[in-house]
Length: 314
Image 1 (cartoon, one colour):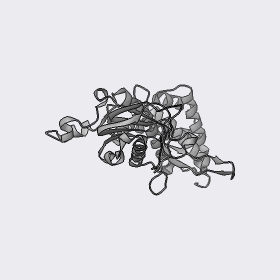
Image 2: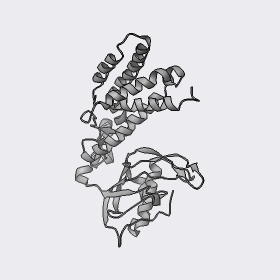
Image 3: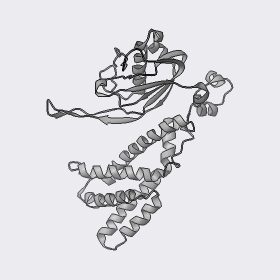
Image 4: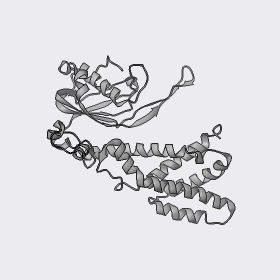
């Protein structure tokens, strides 16, 4: 953790300051955060401490904020990415790390007002001069953003049922701000599910799978690029493409049906698993598109890469 973090302000003079009890901290670029063991981490708690350290060093009004922050209520919306690079001096690739991606947001609620910078350039973590760690702060309006948090009797736990407590602790995706975050996080969730699914033994890059899966994946991706946005459309086009009775076409049709069945099954589960893992309610992707088709696209991409890079794996 960079405990010596100092604010980075662009231009002349001080950045504008705002105060409030409910603070949003949202990453504008990927952030590289180290834990106490000098290891890159994607722990939400370490990210929170990094942010509190930054705000504490920003102004004397935030004295002992890290200590006060131990008791603050926290809602987190996390997204991840992989970074690397190339060292031209040593002609070697830089180590790759999984880090917090842009869009990652923490909503922290304190008992007392906290001062935050609301203008200028702010950054946390490592390699900030390379553009990493840029962060945006704002104070959330209590009237508009108090959904999904414990308030009043719920906070005190007085005469509130277990189900009401559970529901009041969920972030409400009907809030436009929360929904915008959810859409970005849902895409990451789908990519992760597709990556896990592509790692199944049945998709091992054997010579036979490479021969059958690679052209089948290319054909299905082409269908999606042609604008098919419903899984049933893709099914019908697949049947027409591979309807010939020769053995090769039938084998590819079998692989295509396996892929489409996986997408159909996942399409019915994705929203539920996302809401449960992220503690979100009232979220649906249906207004944006078909979750099954979204998964299908990501699954095909992962299968394509696995077939390409799997020489030693087979």
